[in-house]
Image (cartoon, rainbow, N blue to C red):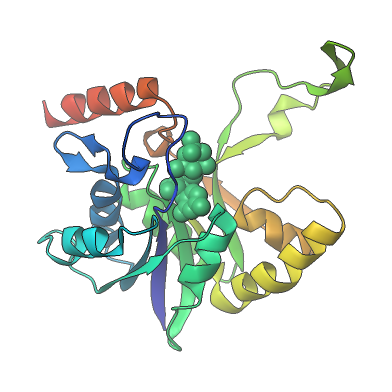
Length: 238
Ligand code: CTP
Ligand code: MG
């Protein structure tokens, strides 16, 4: 009965536009992937980590994570895939037989609070097969379709019933394996959008539960996000 965290770090960081993969870009002197790994380990509810590395950088990632005194859980590093979904699949293949709970977390969310990690694992351990942190949406969201050189609004979903979801997402291991096999195949065949792991569980028709997210777990996509993250860290160190 152990919890494995898959830390996805194999992306290239195109939108950040640096000359190295996003997970290796530094924040306050340490790569994003190291911040995320330290916080997962500090939660006390993660027993081991599998990190997906960008092409050719498995050794760099291993040196970085295996020698860090703050990452006090066993770490395996594996090659990621061409898509995030493929990277999660590669990580999942390394789960050990006792890993009954699997978390999937993005290195692009380096400031994830340990409390949030505990909240997600706690909800899975209490019997929910798929658990996702979510925050209320503050912007009004429009549904659109292409219309000539512009877009036409086709609807406005009720904002009160929308949640912006984050990682870590937590799963009963067997359910996540099924989602990545059957759910992913069905999503492809039926052209269903499944942009996160919970989406693949939804394709199976299985329930996904939301626990309160945390603004600190925001995703770093652009330079502005990185700047924001450094301000947040300065504030919390002050
Ligand atoms: N990721 C991954 N394998 C991929 C693509 C993405 O492991 N083939 C990981 C990223 O490293 C990141 C997380 O999935 O931690 C979320 O992806 P995203 O924020 O889109 O990161 P990138 O794909 O690196 O960025 P971009 O889309 O701007 O290139
Ligand atoms: Mg991406």
